[in-house]
Structures are given as C-alpha cells and as structure tokens.
Length: 263
Image (cartoon, rainbow, N blue to C red):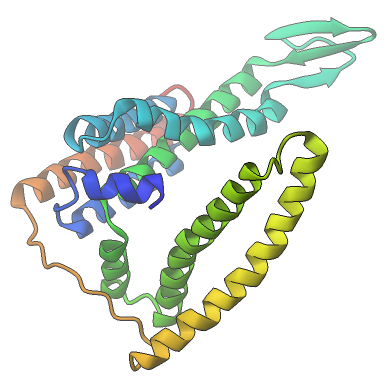
C-alpha cells in the first residue's frame, strides 16, 4: 500500500461525505488559481494544512515531506522566471559573471512568488482530497458526476496496477540487493535495465491473469465497487458555503480592483 493510500484510510476525515470534500477542494483550487493572489494562496495553504494535519490527524512531518516533493519541481521551474542572464543589470539583484550578469527584476520576483504560492496552494487542495478520501469514494464521486464508465474503468485499473508494479519492482530490487547487484554505479545501471525488462514481462503476464480473473467473475465491461452511503452534514455544508463565498468575493475583488499581486 503506497503512503498516500495508507494515510487516507487512517484519516479522521475518511468518513466525512466524499462529495463535501470534493466540492471544497475543487472550488478552493479554482478560486486560488483564478485569483493568483499571494495572500489567498497562503491562506488556502494554511487552511488545507490545518484541516489535513490537525483535523484529519495526518502526521505533520509526513505531510511536510509530501509537500516538499512538488516544491522541488516548482522551484526549478520558477528559476527561469526569477533569474535571467543578461549583459545589463535589472533592478532587483545582479551577480556579475564575467561580462554577463545573473540578474532579476522585482516584477520577475513577484511573478515567481505568485507562481510558487499558487502552485503549492493548489497542490494542498489536491492533497486534502487524496489524503482524506479513499479511492472507492473517489470512484463513486465520478459516477455521481456521470463521468464515462470507460474513464472510470481505466482509472481503477491504473490505480490497481500501481500496487502490482510496485510490488514486483520491490521484489526484484530486493533480490538484486541480496546478490550485490547494486554494489557500484555500473552494476546498478545494469541491474536497473534488467529490472525494467523483467518488470515489463511480468506486468504483461499479470495483466492477462487479471483479465482472466475478471472474466471468470462475469465481467461485462463495468467494474462495480462497493461504496458506503454517508449523509451530508449540515454544519459542514454551511462552513463550505461560507469559505467558498469568502474566496469568491476576494477573487472578484482582485479581478475588479486589483492586479492579482500581493492582494
């Protein structure tokens, strides 16, 4: 079981109506992305962190580690906006490198900050949903939203195969370590290539076995998943409406009177 899947089964918010969590996370994400506001991004990031860690009961240390994974990619992608190489200095900073300058402008810093905060806030919305909602509940949400069955079926099979491939890869990697298959860089690369080759062959074999098992259980093109019927909480619905109205009002205020900067 992968970490995210394990955490969502341990969350205190697991038994909250999944549609409430879905609506909250998606609407919050939309308002955050549309506004591109640093203040709203920080507020959304703090709100989702509190809900996930304090209310949901997820370990703060583990949540921080999960957030650091996308942060590394965001920072790398944002460097192109913040840092420039030019023959002249910009107004924010300038580091001479021979005849060139590694420089940046205040406008670039502002846009880079907006991008980082907005992206992290949007990711926190998705983490709130994925860390507090099981896959079976997400599938049921998709069915209620009338998502095509083919897409739901592909999602279920891909989700299932994540565990299958991880299990096979872990077994192969353990066997290679036991035989000193990773003692140096050259051997590690050779072992990795062998693992990919064996992983592909075994995954194809597992796919055939999985399809045979589904056919034996009268598979007719639709995967049925049992789900629990959890009633909506009036208190939660009211709180969601209040939060989303505040975010909507702030977004409209920014678009009408502001420029989406520090507002």
